[in-house]
Image (cartoon, rainbow, N blue to C red):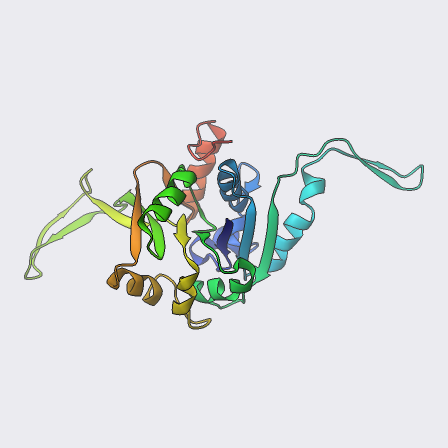
Length: 257
C-alpha cells in the first residue's frame, strides 16, 4: 500500500526554521521529521512513499538523491581511476516518489495531483509534520473492517491555553486555567482512503480538511480510529524543542525501529 505524505506547505508558524527549508525537512535528532515519519511506516512494512512537495521542493529531492551517500561509509580513491568504494549500505528499503504539487496548492489539490501515482487502490495519507506511536497495521485493519471511504486517526489533545466557560446565552461564566478534563479531539493524520475520495477533490484550491472530509462525514462514509497513545505535531519552535528533547532522552515514543 502506498503512503502519501503532505509536505508542500510553507510552515509559517515555525518560520524560524521554515524560511530556510521545507517544514518536513526540519531536523529532530539530526534527521528530518519527514524521515522519522517514513521510518514509522517502514517499521510496519509500508515502504512505498509519495511525497507531495511544494515549497522549496528541490531540497526534498536533493536530500533523497544523496541519501545513499549520506547514510553509508564511503572511500573516495583519487589515486586509481577516481574510484568510489561503498563500505556498507544502510539505506532504507524505500521507493520514494517526490511530486512537485505546486507552491500555493491546497491540501486537497496536492492529493489530487498525485492521483496517477496512487492508482485505483487504497492508500495511506498523513501530514509531514507529526509523529506518533499509532499501530499502523491495526489502523489498516480497522479501515478494511468497516468498508467506508475513509479513516482518520482521532487524537485527544490537551488544551494549550486558558479556558473560557460560556453558557448557552454567550455569557462568560468562568475564565480559568486548563485542567485534565479540557481536551479536544482532532484529526492527527495517519489516515486511510479508498480511491473514490478523488471524486471530491475538484482542483488546486480544494482544502482537504473542509468540503471533502465534511462531505464524507455527512454521508456516513468517514470513520475515526481512536488513538490514546503518543502524538505530537511540530507546529511551532516549542513543539520542535519538545520532540528534540524526547529524542535525545532516548525515550521518543514514536521510535519503534
